[in-house]
Image (cartoon, rainbow, N blue to C red; front, side):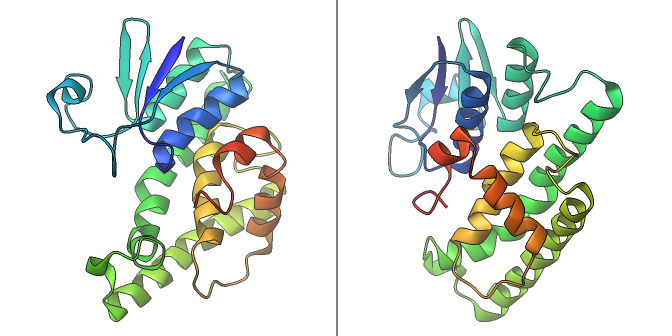
Length: 208
């Protein structure tokens, strides 16, 4: 059985769990790693991931870290062509949006999330907060344009790995209290994702 190490309040751990749900894979969870639990800087965890970051996937003797790499591995290893197409062009589109989520979307909400949701005292500068909100909205505007074109999911009419990672970030957008611009395509997308079992298990108001 697959084992996933990391607290389920982590958005990156939830990526992996949602993917496993989509693929119908049973998972053993070792949740007590990360913020508020055992530190991933402990030697036994660093032996699995020298970066001391969650999640870590263990599949028999195979150990893998980096959440988006884990998603690709699961799709490749467990008949996930529906989530990660084998066609080079279709797969490249999924990869493009997986990389965009990691490089552009996630960094854009960091300051606002830590300020508004985590209430971290180190993230309360009003100027930086306003700039963070503007940056996040601008990045979400790119997603709005894409979803307005596809009318369904990020890469087209089929749900893919890209929708797992971006869907979790979109859930965080709606779960963070601040004045957001109206993005009707993103709102419709969020509602569409909410019909999926993985979303219901690993997103929602209690898991921003």
